[in-house]
Length: 99
Image (cartoon, rainbow, N blue to C red; front, side):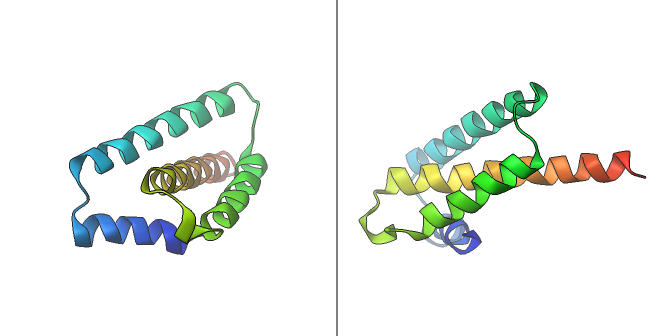
């Protein structure tokens, strides 16, 4: 859930993740974000689809945290951040069209 994403962000701020970890997180985020933007543009997914997947990612994030590698956690956290960003964009666009 958002708590684990915050943990990664706090880890970044408090423990100064190595630059390779920051680069890997940014890479995971950029790839996921670009993929989602394409899927939305193609009409393949909508806000409900994104929200549903985001809920699943929150569950995955909460499960087996102790047994997960740092790379896997960075990937999950970056995916959650990308899904959250896309969902916010979709909500903003929907609100703008209803004004």
